[in-house]
Length: 120
Image (cartoon, rainbow, N blue to C red):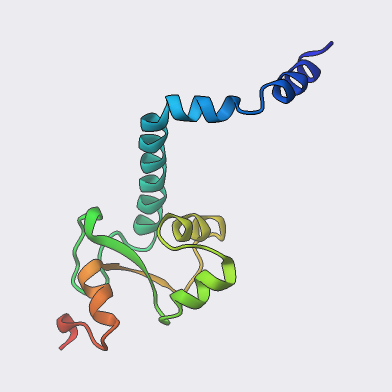
């Protein structure tokens, strides 16, 4: 029996092997996921200029991607993403399309109510 066949049969006999491993390594998996997601965010933010397009904030903790046409909800429905790291992965996978910009959380939130106070 070759290795591939052996593993296939072993997995049939041990269907919950991944659950056990995931439980034993929960903290490591969480940290790895956060690191991976922060790398996606950094790639996107840096590609689109690395700072808030409105106020110039450059601290990565405060920055986010903004749908320039205010169509984020439509985009999430259409491409079945949940926002956040899903959006960053989608942007990278789709070769950094137009229609996005970097905004800090304050400017992004203020945009929902019309014009950001920095623009007044």
